[in-house]
Image (cartoon, rainbow, N blue to C red; front, side, top):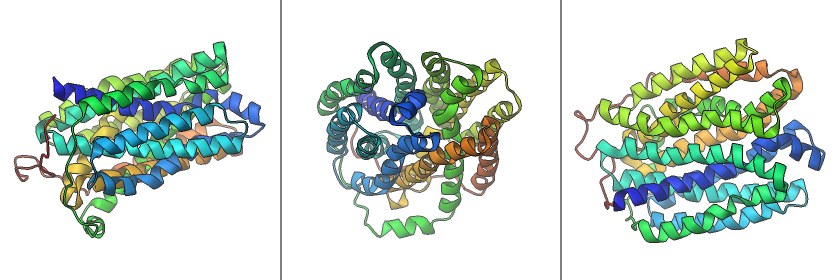
Length: 397
């Protein structure tokens, strides 16, 4: 029972993280009008969270290998609470950007220690499933951001809408204190950073993650605006339709993790997810039917479930020699650099071409390219790997 209470807290960490990450996306048009800015600027507002998050992930991975993960998560929750209030009350775009930066920093405190906790405290044979349930929280957070926040904005205004994530922080803080155990240092040295980059397959793995995440955030960041601009959806309607992708991610993540546990390998699941992503983006490039677009986005959520959480476990296990926290953090950093670029990149693409087909075309090209870099990365099946399967178990919730 204690194991699943711990999993529920880790999942809730990602609920809060993803609510904050995605909160502005269904209201891009309202924020653009409120501050009299263009799509490139609101894309940068969205990306300010992602940039700060990306910058902090590697330092946080080093800390997660050395500092009690429970304490790091609690610090992140407190930071998130304060910055959430600041963003809701922001009088101008500059203050909003600053608060989003602090929220991004808090996201690193929630994410990297959560994944390192999974690698450190659960057996290899169950890690995929556990990570899938943690990723369930990421999907749920995205669903809540795309549905509750625009609904609250319609009925109570933007301030009330952006105060909603703060309500998650206090019960989460209590859960972290009550249901998580303290973790021990991995004993890894700082010199392991260089050895990790010298490890065969690590750089191609990072390139795969960069391209895959860049493509993922085309839908995560811009689908609501596409549905509103090209098909006349309202803010709530577009957010609800877009949330179907996040729902698929939420439901399929535990199944994808369980599948990788059953196969005894993560790479085949990553390849399947990449192939499905290619199909989804191809539909979005060549179809201008709202029903097919929403269906493709729903399928893309399932494809993301086959790649996003699995890529983290893949990194934590295959490249664990330098410390699982560091390997996962560098993988996450690469993904977040890509997602940070996605806001202004796809915003500029839309401003320059006036066409969402161009946005989806760039995402399709990135996904095709990502598969070429995944191919050379070698993974031993567990029967051939060391008994520990990566980092040794430190404690058991």
